[in-house]
Length: 380
Image 1 (tube, rainbow, N blue to C red):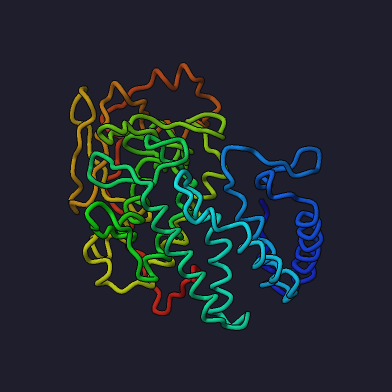
Image 2 (image 1 turned 60 degrees about the vertical axis):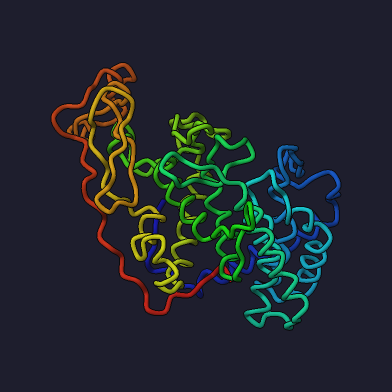
């Protein structure tokens, strides 16, 4: 990738306008030709969209694209198309219990329509605004109900694979939970016990950062920092982490690029939203530290304690612990190996290396980032 610092926004305007002109033609064609009764368009085969039967996770894109085109072009045709398709197609997805995709489907449709009203881009209609907000409340609570506990008492929103499965993708569905929370909603549990949607969103973000993101140290010393595993697998009986996995990537030990993109964007969205919340709202979950820990600014990692099963060592903050992985279960390398071109290390040589007296690091936390004085929330 080559970057140019001399390019101005004005120079890019003709290209941007071209993008939306091409998109407008394609969206019109897609909505004219596609029959939603056959499922949602997922990807193309020989230049034509086709559906896949696992879930309708892209239906929100199908109805959301016209809404975004209206936002960019002021063409009322696209607003009417997006609104009408939302009301016709999306209600069953408000109560979809078997998926982790409410952010993609419901925020892309009802969420964008609500945002346009709040921004004054379309005429304000109290009844329609109330409908969109009710949809967002229901969606957030339904998504939060798809929750599995981890052995540290926290948990994650599990994927359509089942309660053992944590997907990187689901970072982008946390928008459903926090928007519903912002609208004053909760999930009602057994015996009418209110369950905080904010708490579940924070727990999911922290669990994803802890297990799906690799940091090149501790458990991840054999790997490169910044890698993202598509899926983490847990024992649903006791919440213990078992292994990485993947459903769409090359292998559990390679980065599925789209999964990395979900994580990068998902945490950015949550950080932006969290910085708009009052401190007392976060106090029950650790206050300012919860902003950092939930969104990837990690607590210190533990050290290795034995060759037995991974021990749990609490961090100094008392808010998170990562497995203290045994030597026999972890492939580790001395820091000097990082200066050697990776291509020169064959798989046999990599596996034969063992940790020396150093190389486990991870005992310091990144410096706090300054909190903006006038943070805005792009989520609505």
